Image 1 (tube, helix red, strand yellow):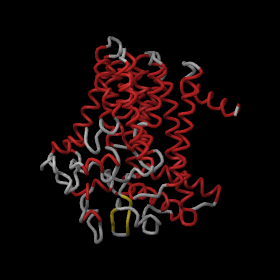
Image 2 (cartoon, helix red, strand yellow):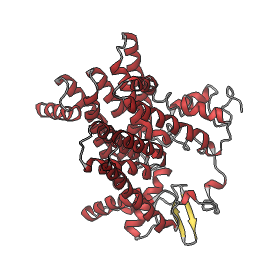
Image 3 (cartoon, helix red, strand yellow):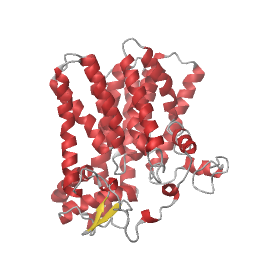
Length: 446
């Protein structure tokens, strides 16, 4: 028992930077262990769904068959995210993440002899832990130390840390193979680096290089991070105004070059398969007769409603983010952090607007939460904590803050059981007549 207590204290001290009392550090250590255990159990027990199966098919094809074509993969008929070329089927996903996963699978196969063909469940679980759970754990350490350095109230820090560890969809999706959580973690790292560079004019070139690397890395994993990358670049140029900023753009060029190189070799174009016309049109393709969310024809205002506060709502499914709006205003009014407020506020507003106005109106398909907006989680999380920390919350408001964290945990835990499904919140709204899939649109005509 004494050894376990020491481990908990060591973890808590690591994620808090040793800035808070021993009791707070112990609680933080418990949060990390519970989060890690939950993710590992989910990684081992949940089935492979269609979206991650597309990337797993490419990983298997690269290592076991030496090619990108997935015709011989055990996941071929699990996924609908595939296209047909003259020589066979290919995953429609951008290739960078699959290439990185193939490195992990090759190492695992070489060391243990495990394979998808004979040990599918175990291999999938180990890849989930290596590619998703461990990066999430690193993100918790980064977020914990970053927020501890910027927040004064230890209760705000603890509840904020709990919310990121178990109360957002980054937790719910970190036990399944996906690009959104990894991109969001890179946005977190970029935010930390960007804000530090804006404050420390004497920072070394290596920090600019690393910040550029993770910033563009987020974009090539999830194109929804593009507006954040643009905002971060403008923020640095305006704040620093020194030639050393060139290292940021050099770092950003590296993942971009790798992405375009792999994409061109695979598709013969700089566009991934899903960006090219006609490749989904083949006999038996799901996309010839899409169903449910993929077949919606809603008016724009209904889509905006559900994206923000409805069945996939950014604010309804993670209520903590309701505190982000006053948090952004708080930052904008601060004489020393005004730039942070404008960066976060502009990027969040523009990204949400682009997806609502220009994106495909299917809510990311059958999935819990608005997964295309996960790249905004670090920005909204940080600004929400800023408001709670800078404002003297009354007992009622503080209780409301904790309730918002708790409700987010309910949705995140539901996603942990399998995020590629209709959420309980979505089912509830359908029952009330507020869903999107017919006939559940009684109260929202159109």
